[in-house]
Amino acid sequence: DAGVTQSPTHLIKTRGQHVTLRCSPISGHKSVSWYQQVLGQGPQFIFQYYEKEERGRGNFPDRFSARQFPNYSSELNVNALLLGDSALYLCASKLSVYTGELFFGEGSRLTVL
Amino acid sequence: GIQVEQSPPDLILQEGANSTLRCNFSDSVNNLQWFHQNPWGQLINLFYIPSGTKQNGRLSATTVATERYSLLYISSSQTTDSGVYFCFLFGNEKLTFGTGTRLTIIP
Image 1 (cartoon, rainbow over the protein chains, first blue to last red):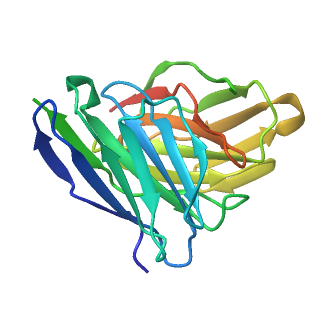
Image 2: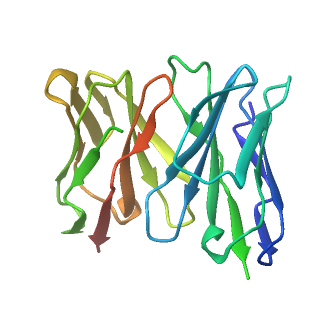
């Protein structure tokens, strides 16, 4: 069975641009969450979605948004990119929002120039 | 929000040594996992352990939820054990990584 898949794996953007990152959960998993990991720090929680509804939000500005589709895949969007948005963006999935082990994808590494 | 502190922050050991990593948390949670992050950034599941004790080869973990801590034991360390170890706590809408322990195993 395929694990959590993320795309793209690497990308380079310039300040002010917009980026969309994609995540496909493990088959049967209905909860997806997103994290930002800046170099040298631990991952920080951004969003959690379950059954297409937002079920938790971390301390990130409104430039960050996400959604979950009927097939449980998810997109993370970041507008008006800043240099400080350069980071590894991680997606994770689990069976439900209430319980279950979390599994992470390999991440999308974003560089903002 | 919940505070999750790990200790020690850095640990350097000779190959073959044993180690204990600790995770303290400030509030009760439903779920706890331990991860190993390799040099390429991949988060590898070690244990899903909201309570009790589990063992997997050279690794074992114990969570005492009533006292709000979890321990990860690594025995007979190998160089491939190097990396950053995170505990991760999550309830229904709260998901928090610990501060991490960077482990370096010297041949």
